[in-house]
Image 1 (cartoon, rainbow over the protein chains, first blue to last red):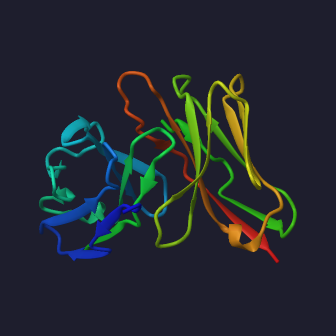
Image 2 (image 1 turned 30 degrees about the vertical axis):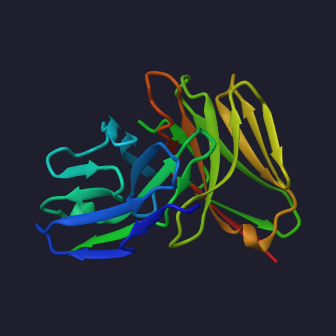
Length: 112
Length: 115
């Protein structure tokens, strides 16, 4: 399809619990990106993939965050032992070119 | 350090008039710039982009101007319509160092178009 599908739309986790977010990129797009938006502020880059390979993970808090993009599966972003500060909207985007960047509608994670 | 800055958190204009949203950047390696529009509870949607080899790009009611020497770009919306009311994000990317289109965003400007 021509949309980036993110699930779930909302996720509530107790502090210390695990959270897993999913993203199905647009077919044919080689690049997948994850961004975090806290309190309606700027988007913080987390990680990017070229196909199933990690391309840039400079934005990832490595101790607790991990991500995968495996063939024939949605991409995933996993947060182990969530903290209150992880509460944010997580956006996935996919692209095939610099102009073809398409975002999903996001997953709102609330850590209580 | 904030590499992409949108210094106006909000802008209010009358329907039919021009909206001008501004964006400044500090990283001289940025060579591609995009504007996104975002409604609440939705993802950003692409509006218009410009490469650093150009100084203007136009698409219908939307025009983006780039002033490389000033490291400044602006988005013009003419005429503004109430449906344009949204948060507008400026974003930039660099093709150097294998950055693979990673975007750096500003903090957004809330545009309100009054009927």
